[in-house]
Amino acid sequence: MPTYNKLVRDFIPQIIEKAGKQYSTKVLDTDDYKAALRTKLGEEIEEYLSAENDQESLEELADLLEVVYAITKTHGSSMEDVEEIRQQKKEKRGGFNDKIFLIEVEDD
Image 1 (cartoon, rainbow, N blue to C red):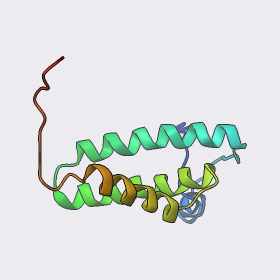
Image 2: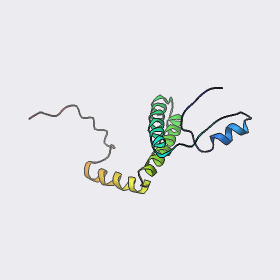
Image 3: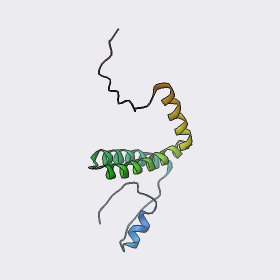
Image 4: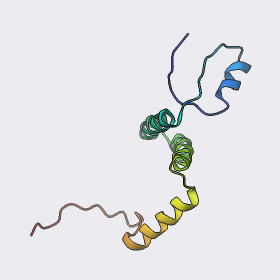
């Protein structure tokens, strides 16, 4: 039986069960959950970076966003709060729409 030792989406156990396979799981405590979410975030970033086409990229971005939603909750906040912070930062510093690539800045 393969060992995964990773955080999975909520319905994965039912999907495995419907496939007629045996599995084992556990519910993480808060600290382990936060650590697992950080690991999952890294996994999803790697999967996005490895995507080979636009559709795969969008699917990986959706997975990444799901992890961000979960992480946000662990900080006692909401995506609305994150969006507000994002908007404030965009107003002060801009977004990334102009495709500006900084090469160097003169040192005083």
